[in-house]
Image 1 (cartoon, one colour):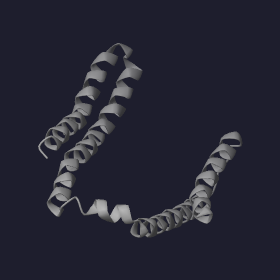
Image 2 (cartoon, rainbow, N blue to C red; image 1 turned 180 degrees about the horizontal axis):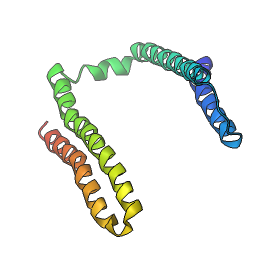
Image 3 (cartoon, rainbow, N blue to C red; image 1 turned 90 degrees about the vertical axis):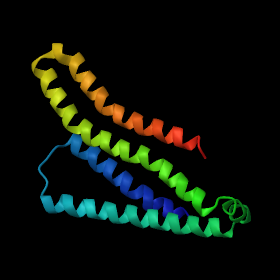
Image 4 (tube, rainbow, N blue to C red; image 1 turned 90 degrees about the horizontal axis):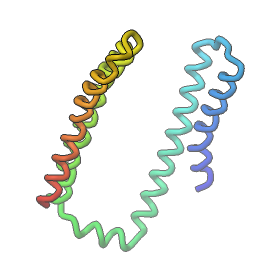
Length: 145
């Protein structure tokens, strides 16, 4: 199990170390160096996560209480729970897609005219409302089960 933790922590530590090093000593790096470093980090992190998931599957399959508790939820209830979670997830994705352009445009407007901060905040709040509506719908649907 410790080698899995090392596989997960090593790319994170390498990325942090490279970021600190490049912050303290900025320099131009070749694109191939950055690409290879990113691929190595992703490969190590993916191996660590895959190992952790496989190790976790073995632990869950061996546990008796987990097998008994899984029998209490029917297929229909499981699908209903997945369907209840969909509005929150999709609404959050929609809000993120809306907030990106709105946020960048708001920052540009605030840089030119700081007195328009209130209006831009309202626009961002309207876009964030999409995610709140999805959350409210999920809570309302959860009450019906």
